[in-house]
Amino acid sequence: MVVARRSSRFVVPCLPMVVVAALLAPAAPTAQQPPPTAPGATLSTDAEREAFLASARIVRARPASKGVTNTVRVTLSDGVVTHDASVQTIDEKQAIFQGTRGTELDFKDSWRFNVAAYRIDRLLGLRMVPATVERRHDGKIGSFTWWLDDVLMDEHERYRKKHRAPNTEDWNQQMWTTRLFDQLIANVDRNLGNLLIDKGWNIWMIDHSRAFRINTTPRSPGNLSKVERRLLDRLRQLDRDGLRQAVESYLTTGEIDALLARRDFIVSHFEKGGPLLVFDRPARCC
Image (cartoon, rainbow, N blue to C red; front, side):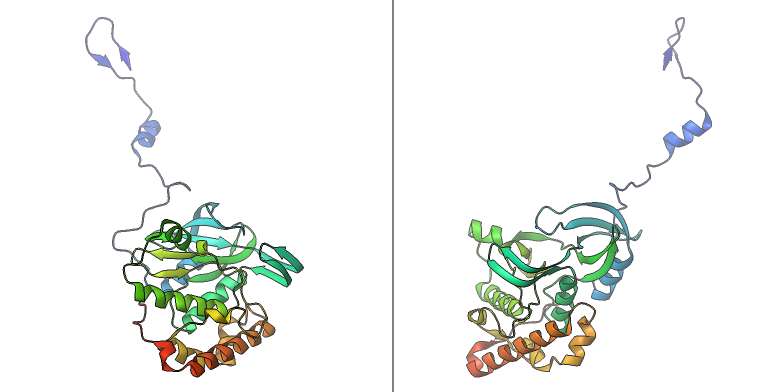
């Protein structure tokens, strides 16, 4: 802006039309500024979330704040909905693995198990594992898991701060189901950081990349406390053909056989225990 010497009026220099148009045009979304979700746009069903995870454009990626498997948090957008996902591309095998919990033979740590855990969760009607699909990221195939909304805390924080659930009975039932599921899928890496609690005090299980070991009986049968009636029925109905159809791209024949053997053990355990070990609970809607 230039001030004229012989007048109190301001003299504005003439700008080229291209510059003026550029100044007036709204800023285009960048990788760090994805378009916001359109008002009223939601993805509430598994099918909708799976399709979004599989095809929405990646507009941002950064390391996740927790985890030891190089998990990446990405922001996805299809132009209408913008939402985050957790991405794991780890796929490792070791004949002998020395970890904090001791030595493990035929060790596997794979994104494939995240997809398998999600699909088995849905076969059993639990809805305690977020939607997960197979997708390529940075040249590697991996798992994309729906980033949970409205997370209140993880179980580590709840335990550390001694928060009590508003409904103790409901909380205990969810924990019994979580422990049963881990025994069924032979998850050797459940920790307090990968149990998330939303604002409705629903438990969500994430990160199953170290599950599906080939032991044919549960490693910790003492964790089989009680079972929800509907879950026990679904376990009885789980057959080889249905299981193979759901997870054959992600589990070997040996891993499927081992899971079915553990299923037989779990069902027998609760049938021997009788009705005192069975409880009823409303199904989780989403």
